[in-house]
Amino acid sequence: MNKEKIIHNTIDFVKEKLKNAEGGHDWFHIERVFKNTILISKNEKVDTFIVSLAALLHDIADPKFYNGNEEIGPKIANEFLVKQNVDESMINHIINILKHMSFKNSLDK
Image (cartoon, rainbow, N blue to C red):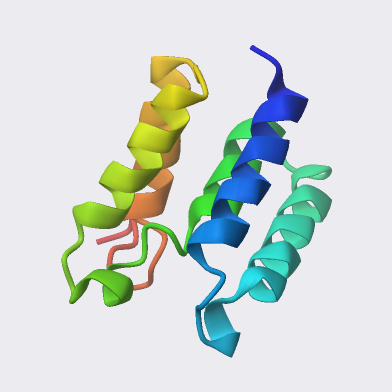
C-alpha cells in the first residue's frame, strides 16, 4: 500500500467532490483541516495516515450534504478507500472517526 499515493488520490477525490461546495466546506477548508491534523499528529500518539485520511474525507461524510442522512457520506468514503486498497481495519477506523467527528455524534455520548 503506497500511502503517499493514497493521500494524493484522496486529495484529488475530495477536490472533485467538493468543487461546487460553498465556502465553508470547499477545498481550502479541507486543506486547513488536513494541515492542522498533520501538525497536531506530530505531538500525539496517532497514526498520521489514518487521521490524515479522516481529515481529508470529513466533509465527504457530512450528513448536511445528504439531507441529514448519516449513512451516505461514510458509505462514499468507504467505497473510495476500498478502491484505494486501504487495509480493512484502517478503513473501519477512518469510518468510525467520520461517524463520530461532529459534536452531535461525539464518542463521549
